[in-house]
Each structure stands twice: as structure tokens, then as C-alpha cells.
Length: 423
Image 1 (cartoon, rainbow, N blue to C red):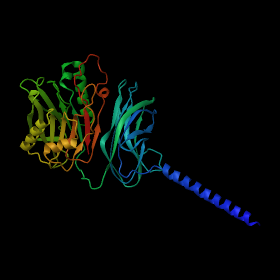
Image 2: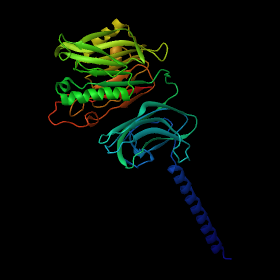
Image 3: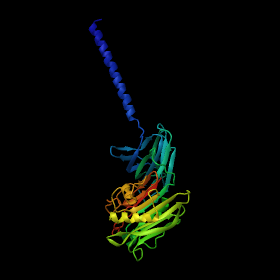
Image 4: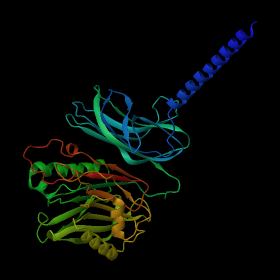
């Protein structure tokens, strides 16, 4: 055979083999890239807007995840062994049916497509014609000992499909961070503003919102600022402590109301009440501090601070530092601060400035615009603690609070509420 033909045959064979190798390389590489990779340290937040939920089905929520370098849709997270904190809230559009809305966490092996192991389940009943919010307990703790697929799922037992919107958080409890072994604590901060209590179209809705959420969320502590309604009574099993700045009734001056679950917490001594000096208001701004001990866990004490800050930073820092010294609060104390801070800065700096040093642990609700009707551009309302592993946040919209706004009703400078769950 001619040498040239032999060389040509060898060349063709070599090219063919190389082509096959390259082809197989790209096949296997694409297969690997298309697999869901575990997140070693996921710290994610996401939203969903108008996802259609099929009738009578369990369904994975597909979240729009955004961050400094990521922006994508994802409904299933493949997680490495470890401890995680998950929180979510979903709001169903109004419907005419009376059924149940359910949220939970599906945990399953990566190759398992079924959703049989649903944990952390929360279920609420719907009311015809009213939007329904269902909440995965914010700060729900999940520990897995092998690689697992984790999804937030929802279902309804109605015959019609509905649209759902909401938000979620997923945090990894990293090794080396302090372990919190106390109870999960449900918290609620809101300033409806005094104008709301000058007209029935607003204060009836506000009071119903306060009490219904205290009960449905099993709130431990709530701080309601400018609740200027002297006939207000909290739900059964709850007690209120009122801090008032002014010489007349609570409808004059300024007021903050701390509401606590008396089945879960026992006050230690009396509340310390004072007014932060305010150059714009001779009455000052109210603050109260009450120490509590848990009825369910021995030797577990907290200082709860409910406050309406001034706009003057030096004034509220000086006032709170003096009060902390008087009460005996130290950097190592377990503090829960719920406040309309009238500040846009970080929660970490705020509590550190008040204490004069940075505590070992700082947890805070997410920074979200709460002030004021109707722009809600200013992130004034916060819940800050100096203990715990994770603070889940739920920040509802105005239409979730005032579901049927009345034309001509005076909502004044109403803020939006903030809910936190410490775990």
C-alpha cells in the first residue's frame, strides 16, 4: 500500500478519535454543570410575585433570588449537612372559597421527586373575599446530616387555583457562631401614628390588626407606639404596660404600649419608664424597660425595651444610656429592643452606640421602609436583640395591613409594622 495512503488513514483515524474524545468531554461537562450543586454557605433571600398555585396540590414555590452576584429563579436548594434557619410568608389572593392554606418545608434526597416529608407545617383558614397570609415560622430551625434537597412548599384544599406572593430567607448556622438554646421568641413592632386614632375608619382596623396578629403569630412581646386609644385591651392571656409622656390622658402627649404574653413570661419587678428629651416636643418621647423571666425555661431572663426615639441622636443615646445604667443593663445582658428609631442607619451601630461597645451577638430584623404613609421610604422601625442565632423578618405592605383603604380616611403618618422571630 502506498505510504501516502497509510499516513492519510492514520491521520483520519487520529482526527476521528480526538473528535470523539472532545465530544464526550463536553457531554460529561454539561451533565455536571446542569446538576444542582450544593450551597456550602447559603445566605439567601427571595421573593415570589403572583405564582399560580394549582388546586388541591402541594407545590414548590419558585423564588426570585437576588444578591450581590446572583439573580435567578430557584425553588429547590441542595444543601450540605448542617444547621439552617428558614423563614417565609405567602399571601394568597382573595377568593370565594372557605378552605385551608398551608406552608411547610420539604426535605428529601436529591433523586427523590416526591414531597412526602413536610415539616414545620403552618396552616390557616381562609375567609371569602379576603386575602390570606400563611407563615412558615420565621427562624424555623432545620438540621440535616446528609446532602438533601430542601424546598418551601404550599398547598390548598380548594377547587380553584390562586395566585400567591411572598418572601423567604435561608441562612446557614456556621460553625463557631454562638449557639442559642433559648426559646423561639415572636416579636412585633408598629407605630400606627396618632392620627389613625382620630377616626374610626382607621383605628378599628388598626386595633383588629394588632390583636389578630398577636394571637395568630403567638407573639411574646409587642411594642405599639402612639396607640392613643384609652379603651384598648389586648387579647386574653396578654397584659399591657403603658409608657406615657404628657400630663393629660394618653390621647395627649406621646405613648408607647408594651404587650406581653403572660402565659410565657413573668415580669421581674416594675417597669422603668422615662421620657427622652425632645427639642420639638416638651413632653419628650416615651421609653419603658421591663425585665422578664421565662415561665418555660428556667433561669432565662430578658430586658425588653419599647421606645419611641427622638430625631436627635445625642438625645436618645444619652437618655437610653442613663436608663440602662439605672436599670442595671450590661453589655452581656439579653436585650430585646423594639423601637421606632427615627434613624436610617444600621441596627448594629445603633445598639453599639447605646451600649458604648459592640455586644458579642447582635440580631436584627431586616432593614425595610416603614415610614411613612404613603411613601414608606424610611427604615425607622426595628427589632434588635443581643442574643439568638437568627432573626427572621416579616414586613407586610400597606395593603396587607389596611386591606380595604377608605377614601378620605386619615391615615396620617402611619408606619408599616415589622415582625421578627428570634431563634
